[in-house]
Amino acid sequence: MSHSAVDATQAHATQITTTTAPATSAPASLAQHSVSAGQSEPADPVLFVTSELADFVKVGGLGDVSAALPRALLNHYDMRVLMPAYREVLESIWPVHVIGHLPGLADIPACDLGRIELPEGLTVYVLLCPELYERPGSPYLDEQGREWEDNAIRFGRLSLAAAQMAMESSGERFEDQGWHPDLLHLHDWQTGLAAGYLRWNNDDTPCVYTIHNLAYQGLYGPEYLSRLGVPESAFTPEGLEFYDRLSFMKAGIIYSDHITTVSETYAREITTPAFGCGLEGLLSDCAGQKRLSGIANGIDDSWDPQTDAYLACAFATNDWAGKRANTDHVRRMFRLAVSHGPLFAVVSRLVHQKGLDLTIAAAESIVRAGGQLVVIGCGEPAIENALRNLEARFPGAIGVHIGFSEREARCIFAGSDFLLMPSRFEPCGLSQMYAQRFGSLPIAHRTGGLADTIEDGVTGFLFDELSQQDFQKAIDRAFRIFGCTELFYAMRRAAMAIHYQWRLSVTPYRRLYHQLMVPAGAATHSLRHVSV
Image (cartoon, rainbow, N blue to C red; front, side, top):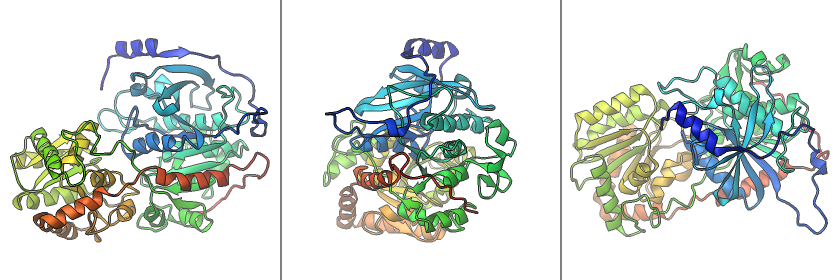
């Protein structure tokens, strides 16, 4: 949603308030965090650092994870989130209270730190830096779909802020009523430098670094060393140098204590040349050192067809009349003809990774066989245009919405019979879980989290070779099953019975956090220099 500069100024005036003056002295050490007599032991403080949060802005699965996982861990830790104060954050209904100031470094500007209280008791810290974050477009791209030229500085600021909030001495310190993180949980390339800033300042705060998609690595020229305040000694194959470029992703891997990714299969895949994006050697070494593991994502409890307010009609397992009401609603949404054939869907970022070229090539065969197709998402202009052309070729049989709406997406999951996910790689994937919960059977490439969450022929369909022929065979299987009503409904029931709630991920994260959050002074952080 775009707003004028006047609107943005008014939003600032009404929603941002200063509640405390910036702190100026160094915070107490972790060892000094104690409990008064007669009080119960407080929850360990953890700072969850991310570039997007679905409460405000979501580009992909990272936004959903960042909204759900901290909330799932709130019963066990004092979880708080750090993210940039994008325009969407400042224009939300949640007031921002300014609580402090964080100094700059080299070309990274200083910024104020705001605090927002969200439902379920989740605290979100936001970086108030208008020149970096208050812009139209997405967190990463401008309105023309081009990467922001200063993304290195923008996410260097996020990484630096995370380190400053954890460091025992950072000039103008961060402290929010005595709160101080004992562990940083960093996410994707945008936060990778945070672990480096800690180590370059001899700070041993433990870091967990989660890779959501290894293909996006945050690569910049060596001139950014000085601009980001990175020591030249770190620009080596054993540090963050990656083929003569500075890599945010590699910094996160090298300097963090443990690396996770979002499915067990993807954790294995990224140690191979096919999926390692040039970092497979480093990641293989991490796996050998027991520093790499896969912890699957989950979905939150709102994904329930019996209670979801977005749906045209709530429905339960075996209530296929309710399911059909949603199918009819989706057909009306996309101006499709009345049909008794299967409805296929794509709910995805429209990028090469997602195999949209395979879907586009298969679309005509789906229509000729009596099926229909709806697509929602945005991404690469060439793919968007190809989908628009497809819709024009098959009016009444194919509907396309370039953009994203949470309401429409949920209606599509509930109304579709099959979800197409021929991804070239898929670290975890959430859409297949959403689809299964709403009785839509995914048709997917056997890779990453898709292989971990879909049982072929039971809760969906998997194909092994990433080829048009194999994808088409899987689609043909789906048509045949659709024609066998009892078997089709049995697969629906099996899919809807699966519950990938976040609570299943809480135990492995608690185990990992516990292993890393040793008492201050009990262990000395040992940097692990591993070559690619």
